[in-house]
Length: 394
Image 1: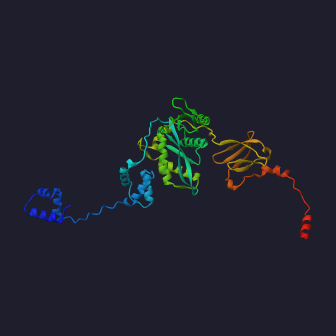
Image 2 (image 1 turned 90 degrees about the vertical axis):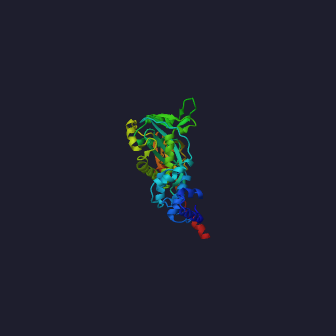
Image 3 (image 1 turned 135 degrees about the horizontal axis):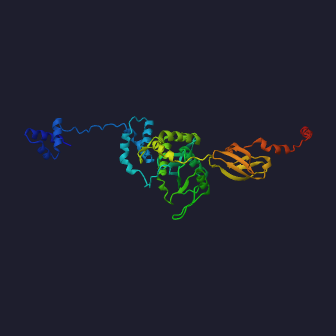
């Protein structure tokens, strides 16, 4: 920066006819600096002009916090800022994020392209969110068609075998057809054993599911689950988009209804970054290649055995449910759906049905189950005069 004495020297040398280039060399500055000083007619004031205030400036700390939490989806960040009063566009947000992207943690993913109707990839994700006013771990079953990158997910409170099968079935129903194969990780609900260089031994019930729907089961190589790159990508997309936009839910039913809306309004209309095509449009070429759904739905309910107690109840999930008198003491079969419908069988015949209740609600009883038991009870009648005599003596 020029000093006041430099300005005085410039004026003196100019009056003597010295060229600007030579003046600049004398002062050790750029010739443009000398030109600007002459145009200005004085030395610099020493005060820098204030930088232009960007609409994004007040919101940059919010972006930094979201990036630190692993949220790198520009559209989600834009929605978060708009909710807090931001009125700018998305380009300035992307420009702010761009130099920070090298800091984003990532792992190499092996992806390969499959033809229409060939493969669906299955995986589980999990997250802590608010359900019915309290924080709870939520599992979501994600299934992605390889060709169009269209996916479906279903949220629940367990990731066991029955919920795994239910999630796959719901996704097949959502897609309206069945691919030639379903690629899974090596979870026990699908794969019993998978050794490198040897054949895979699948869970028998998963084989039944595959046979019922007509797809071939496939398993990732051990320790190479990321060969399911397309599905792994969708797990992250759901976490950083759906569960950022929606942070509390009234129930799992409410959560899944919001998921259905979000899939239709957000996921299906998006342009996929790899295939550079709208997912919904690309799926229109996949749909004709999918096989038909079976006429009957595969049964994903739990089947267990109970001993009917002599007081006319069975224990199920921490509570007690009534059974008819005639099956007390019998080994009976129960069927429990994922929606909480309890069906009791005796030698293949339905003898009772209940809706599961919270243990805090108390035992669940149907009066007709114990009608014979109550009729068989003998109630003793006593003469109360003896108690009146005692009362008079006192």
